[in-house]
Amino acid sequence: MKIDALKLTNFRNIASLELQPVERVNIIYGNNAQGKTNLIEALWLLTGAKSFRGAKDAELLLFGSDYAKIEADFYKEGRVQTAQILFAAKKQAQLNEINLSSVTGLAGIFCAVVFSPSHLGLIQDGPSARRRFADTCICQISPKFIALMSDYNRTLLQRNSLLKDISYSAYLLDTLDVWDDRLAALSALIVKNRKQYLQRLAVHAGEIYSGISSEKETLHMRYAASAGLTDDIPAEQYKQWFLQVLAKARAEDIKTGCTSVGPHRDDIDFEINGVDVRSFGSQGQQRSSVLALKLAESRLISELLHDEPIILLDDVMSELDKNRQDYLLNHLSGNQVFITCCDKACFDNLQNGKAFHMVNGGLQNTQS
Image (tube, rainbow, N blue to C red; front, side, top):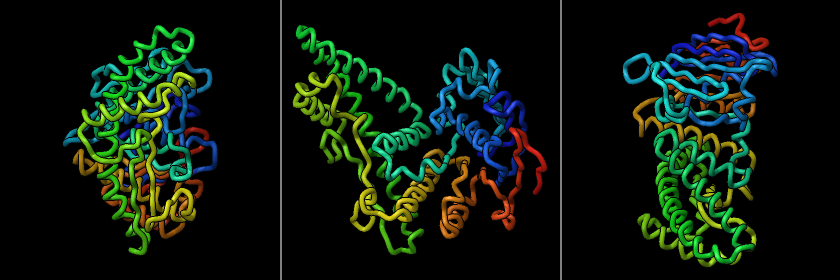
């Protein structure tokens, strides 16, 4: 897919902006705090996902405005399509001028991979960052996973609330069985989806990392389930296993008022040549691992959806050395790419690209 046009209105520090990008590489350059990341964020929101910066909807509106709007024309499946998101008292989304019940309806339609400096800490960050990475990836290729995760989170909140109530009202204990059964069923489906995705991602990430390291190192990744079962088994069997784990943890869960095991506590482990990357990997190895994951994410979207995702590189090139920069750009030859940076000089020799100068939330001095 390719973006033909982007229009932003009252989005963060951008009062009004129109962009007609080229099909290959688009460089958005300028000083800090001019709106470069805001533009990348707007493109990412068209995937139906939440802001990669963790922003709330109210934070997306230009100061003093009561609404913000993102509009895009994009080429996909042999035709030009349109997408729109309106942030106001109620958030609304449209696809081809048809109202969607939720902005998540854009998931799997408008596909992108975002890579920012915050992602470079994916290996070192806590388990929640790695779970969020996996779940965001899965939602793009399987939008039904969004509803599954929402259902799980609601059930988890209900169970945790009940656990707290039980400590004061023991007669509620029998009610816990109902929530345990529901939580176990949802957990089995989530773990199944995560494992299947990560197994496919690991193949691509391993191949890419091997290339980055000139065949000197191998990257392996493994899904670490808090329930302790690592074998691939049918969802129904996993549900029964998880029910047993919940039963063993019940007394402690009631004591603490929270659920101690489940997909919300799972993690992803990474090893290079059999050594844990998080504990013993160098900064270069950790960054190469994340780079491999992001390129693998793009490759897997292409493989499963038969379409090339938009690539959004937000001020990440300056965090990579020259070899990693070259490897990244050379392996995105079929994608439309948006890159933000402070100095476009490092891209002066770039072929099939165009530079856009951003100043105070507007584009100036555009040049090829």
